[in-house]
Length: 490
Length: 50
Image 1: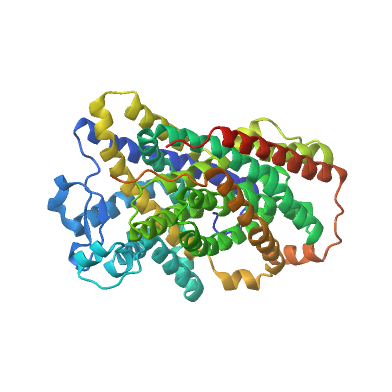
Image 2 (image 1 turned 90 degrees about the horizontal axis):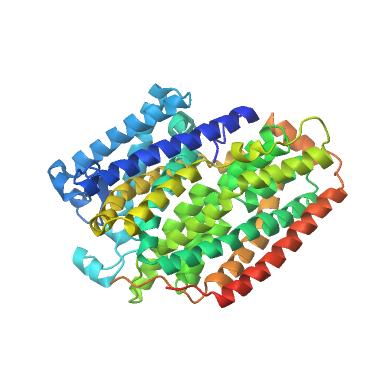
């Protein structure tokens, strides 16, 4: 998800994306390595703040590790803010950002985003079961779990974008949803591996089904959306390629990569990207609720569906998180308690499988365009596969592989200590999710986009998404996942 | 820049689908559907294991 408001040249956009990818890998690995230190007995991340369901605000926050209980909730929050500020400021400095502006804006972004998270943990919003309601002495709850805070963060961002546009512009330096979600995805590798190690059979089954997601996104979605855009709406090839890629594959990254591959004018994929973000927001607000209502009895279908239907990495994976919380809440209310992590793991697996092939698809399109459509001396090179490969995926794979090895290939002591270490890393994954959701909201100025004459582009997106992509995604998810449930919590 | 380009492009004459585009769409769909059928068959014989 690129910054909607910024107009950049294509090489600059590409370079920034690649640097952002590597930065996400570095920060994600840093968090992962610090978390692993706890296996050796040195708890480096136990001070990180975590929120619990509450009615008394004084009890909402606490450090993740009991060893740091002396810090208190407020101390943990300040320590977490300070650590993120230092690491992210150093990181964005490498991207050429104005560090002072970033630090000031990030302070506000973090404050509003985390306040949204705390609000989402309020018992009347988050308590799920009758037992929890009794525990907190309340008679009703929206049953969103505390991950309903993602929705609160998103809504906060939307309010700022649409009612306080000057404030949104002021926050711009720290509104970096792509960076935040990429860091989160790298960290997520540990949680997915720990979950997978617990149930290897199901994990390998998910990998097999990821292949279907690739086929669906690249070969079926793309060609149908491209045809709709070209034939029904009369868009040029230059607009249709980034549009089809944005709607079909993985949103902004695919739009920019394939737009670059066919040598589209720089503004084209950037404008398409802004549309992708808007639709992703709409989907994140609607689809998890639909999944909770109609698919709560098929949790893995719901997870796969979200991965296939929501097109930006951040919105998809975070949408998977919301779906998991909503579906688990509904199931819990019916007396079924699933192990957490499986729905999100399904969404993430599907999304990552789709992401991996962006570079190859961009190369194929580049080859066709340079050799058959815009014939000229500037031919696509095989090295472009690597140039356009989303590097943060490497971070996810590395964290996943190391965690899986520690869980299955090392000593039993290490394997026993790994879930706690991954849990500490996961605290930061959640925080980066919150920052992502808030940032997506801040970038979604619906009125501004409408004024720019996006109606026809939006129509292609609307027709493709709600007339085809969502339903085919649901069908495929159903064919591959129906009848299979996550393990029950013990 | 963006506003002018988008509005101008919408008003521009429609580019007809070239044979290579039709091939790309047709082959993608054909291979995609065939692979999905294969994967659905494999899925039938290799169900998800818990």
